[in-house]
Length: 442
Image: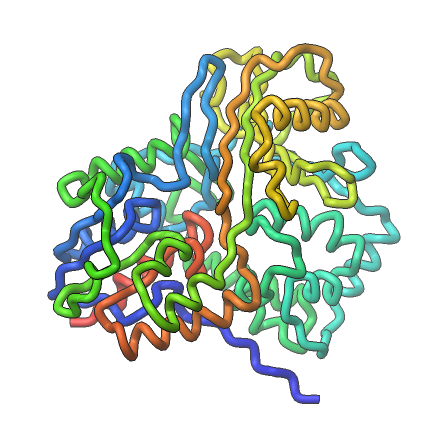
């Protein structure tokens, strides 16, 4: 049986190449729009950013409270050369995790473990990683079962990717999530392919040139520091409180980069692109940051955080140990800060629409199961995102090829770029827009 060729795209910046002699109108001042603006300014290209609200950053942001800070979404980013370049130009200091953040935990049978597998399970996983597979792999569920087996898939892969992509494994596209690695694993064992890909990425980023040796990084004051510095750097180019109508982008004498979410981008088009972008679905996500007295959490273990498999029967997908990861996350060292991430899979979105008190009680009760909480909660902050994270489904993966083709053929004056176009993280978006600028069309 002939296996269908896996398709991967070379860039997540959809549409025609950037032209140095044009003026660009960037729609949206979320992180994607700000990154576009940064590199356009660096290249000396004329541009403006149009934002419908009174602030930049979109879903990203940091709020302060009596006990510490709470991140609206991402609490950090994976280091890469592109982000280092941005921070160097903005004179923004990157901070690395504290030593106590080295430990990562996985919950199994309601207990935190640094390694959740038995010796026998480990041998089974290793055998699968060294075995080539010829069957077609379309989803991350296919990938996990083929190359690691059910135990690894349920205990590690599903919670790890669920925290990033906010979706069940059967809903995630293998080539969309794994990118180039999907090409290298075709009819080959996983481990050698993964090592080759790791060496390739390490060579491209070359972390030896920086004091930051990869891994998760952040800023003093949280992710808001990056948003603030970028928006200050681009301040003369941003128009706030400005709604853009669909007719605005019809002038093909001007260039437009639309960085709004897919469901908002759909309104700028009629026909196929409207239909294709409306097919891109988002996962409802809740992020909750809680503050406790350290002495009241009896079974807590210092570290980066813990991942919680669905078969544990808990609502929480994972917990970040904020006050262990980065300094200055709490106002007093006697306070512990935790962030819990939840996905609302219910048809009626009962979790998203639930009251703050009900969500608080649910989360505290589940944390009590894990950590044995003996005291009262000091404070908490809840962020709800009804359309939080784009689902990198096989349909989305296929749609992006078609959207890219239509833009180039029929709308060469329009580009699409955002966390749904193939670069879901801050790191990936910064790398992609930097790469797009390196291929300027004159």
